[in-house]
Image (cartoon, rainbow, N blue to C red; front, side, top):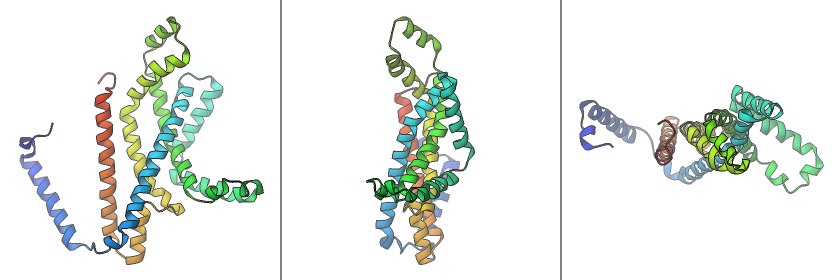
Amino acid sequence: MITLRSLLVPHRIAMMAVFAALVLWCAYALRWDWIPKYAPLAAEGIWRTIWILAVTSVLGFLLAIPLGLAQAIGPWYLAAPARTFCTIIRGTPLLLQIWLLYYGLGSLFPQYPWIRESELWPYLRQAWPYAVLALTLSYAGYEGEVMRGAFSGVARGQIEAAQAFGMPRFTMFRRIWLPQAIQNALPTLGGETILQLKATPLVATIAIVESYAVASRVRQDTFIVYEPLLLLAVVYMVIAGILAYGFRKLEQRVPVKGH
């Protein structure tokens, strides 16, 4: 717990003084007159960043569970594809994955009349489904490997005891194996979610207006470079801080085994 006495130490006072001086310098020496004009666009970009982060993290984690389970206990014909998928995702740049999906699948779909005439075509011609898919697969690839280790780390004695009592496999998985695996993976899950947040600016390369795209728009329109980027850095730091705080509180409510 942070107390006033712990803050009033020389090195922390010096750090706070330097931080306050930097804030004052930025407030008076840099240009901020562009904010009122671009505030609505910035708010939309921040909301879209949070939306993409939430959707891709949830979908990616739901996909990571079967990927990790297949690698931990699955037969070879399930474990091998899961391991290959995670290796490819972790071994290739996310920007390349986004471009392959958007410029690859996006250029193939118009060639098929049954796709162009379907109800999905108004969505498939937009950029956001490919961005969501790429970020979801990326998150699943990294978390799938984490969940593999988390499933393998659950004590086998508990599984054997549940089997001895005749507990059905799905009930055993739902009540014993999955909750403890999530407990084991929770610290890493928080870190991966923050990394996912810092990966969202890449979707601006396929014309999705999120936080970074707004900063680029301000730079192109006004030739102001540093101020939008500084404000963008503050926005990402605030969101990352909220995520870190939330996961820390969650870890306290659901303590990890061995901590």
